[in-house]
Figure 1 (cartoon, rainbow, N blue to C red):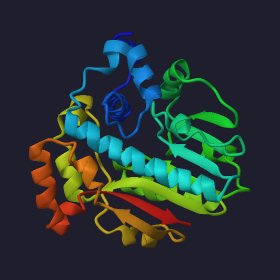
Figure 2: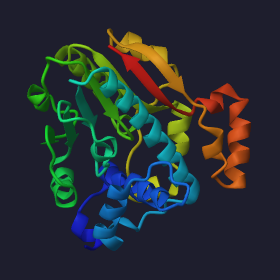
Figure 3: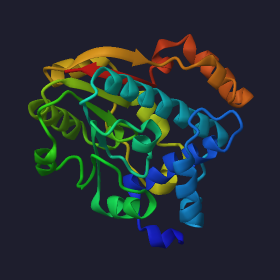
Length: 271
C-alpha cells in the first residue's frame, strides 16, 4: 500500500505517528508495550505509514503514555468485570488486543469512517467489540453506547486536536449518557500545545492543535460531575533512561520547573 492509498491527512494522519512509535518500541529488546499487533499493522501498511519522522525519544514517550493509559484501563476492568470501555479517536491503536479484556466487557472503538474502514483491513473482530464510524464530536453515535454499567472513556492523542467547546460538549454528553466511571486522557498546557506545533512529525501532517489545559481542576468547573483523581507528569525513571542523553537532560530541567513539567501529563477523572 502506498501513502496515497491510505488517504488520511491532518489530525487523522497523526494516527500513523502513534502506530509507528508503538511498532518501533515493540521491536526493541527491552520493549514496554510488546505490541505485536501494531508491528503487524505497520508491516502490512508498508511504506505508506513510514513517511513521518518519528524519532527514538518520541517513540519511547508515546510508549510510556500508552502503557499508563493501558494500566488505568486494565485496573478499571478488573474492578468492574462488566464494564463498558469507550475508546475515543482510536485510530489504528490495538489497545483492545493489548488489554484483551474478558468477553463480559463491552468495548467500543470510535473514529472517522475512513479510519474505521482502514482499521477493519488490519485487525480481526472479537467478542463484544464494536467499531463505530463517526467523528467523536457528533452527538448521534452515543445512542449506541449502553448506559447500564460503569464505563471508562479513553482518549489518547485526541482531545488536543479539538476546539475547547467541542471538548467540553463531548465530555458533558458522555456524563449525561454514562452512569458512572472514569475518563483518562493526555492533556497539554497551552505552552505545551505551542511547542508541539513545532514537532516535525505533527507538522508534516498539517494537523492543528487547539485545546490546552493549564489547570486540571478547571475541567471540573467546565464539566460538572468530573472529579480529578490523578495527574501524572513524572514517568518511570527506568523508561527515561531509554531516551537520548539530550532528552534526559531536558527532562531533568523540566522536573524542577513546574510550568515546564506540566506541559504534558496524563489525567484521570471520576464521574
